[in-house]
Amino acid sequence: MKVRLISPANIELDEAVRYYDHQLPGLGFRFFQETSAAIERIRLMPEAWSKVGQRTRRCILKGFPYALLYVIEKEEILITAVAHLHRDPEHYKDRIM
Image (cartoon, rainbow, N blue to C red; front, side, top):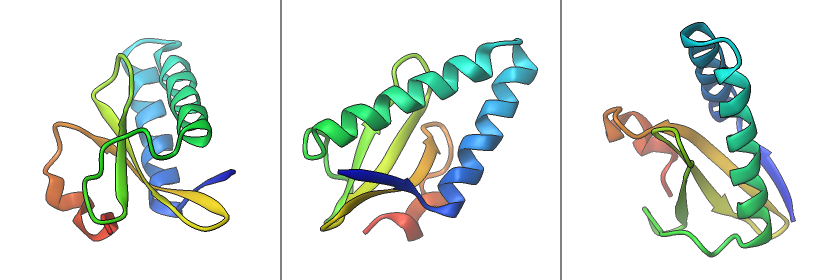
């Protein structure tokens, strides 16, 4: 199944990669690798993670305080947020279905 990040999620991913690279060179790449691995896990087993809304699920990244929020559509999986777990959940409320 195809996986697509919506625009706000893409921006969040880019910002997190830049933040981690600023903290320690190469850490942003490690964050990107873990995000890619989580996307692949979601693609292979889309219903394996807990629901946080009626249709939205959450896959927590390994080694980073982030989760991918996503919705399973008929022909694709939409990543709606690259959510920092210590951020106010209200920030992502409009992307939880």
